Length: 239
Image (tube, rainbow, N blue to C red; front, side, top):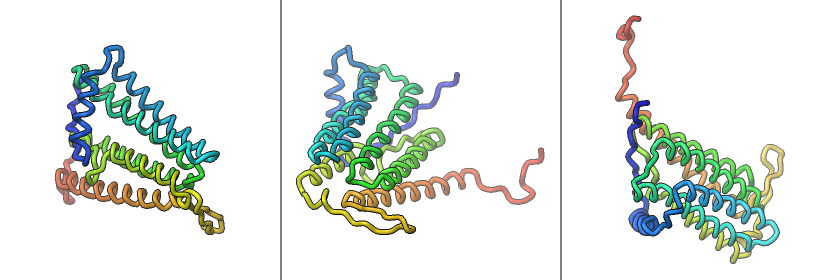
């Protein structure tokens, strides 16, 4: 089998430099019994904790602390598995690429569905954000093959920055009663829909993700169109 060319990782987020130093420091001190697969499992467990925290917040808003803890656990496992492989020089490019993208989809599904079942966010809004995230994931995966670029950052924001924002939002919703008590019901095509404060935040995130996707898609579509311009009538190769 032909060796797949390694894509260049594009990571220019605000916390990238500090995070990279921290991850390398942790990886160098990781017990030998822990490997990248172990950390991947830890990352998934973190996503499960996020899901449970949101679900249990229906009974007590302070269960959001479990989601906050899950965000830390998810960051630890998801961010450190690749770093550990690179530090130990035991990368598995095809396996890692395959596993990472599939696990990311599972992790994000747990997070967004959990938020949608929490009573703090409408499930339709949560799933719309997830759909936009998947669109960006497809875009990144395609460019990893066509341009050998693996883009992890948009507008100086990467996965870690988004986790930090969610962490802060969780805390605000726990300690500012208005944020989790507010609700507004309206009719959407004769169907009553109830929105809370988190839904407006979610809609803002959805718009940002869609704009990032569309701008990136149009930019690269033009780039590829220049590489392979449409042939004029009569210029097509005859079979």
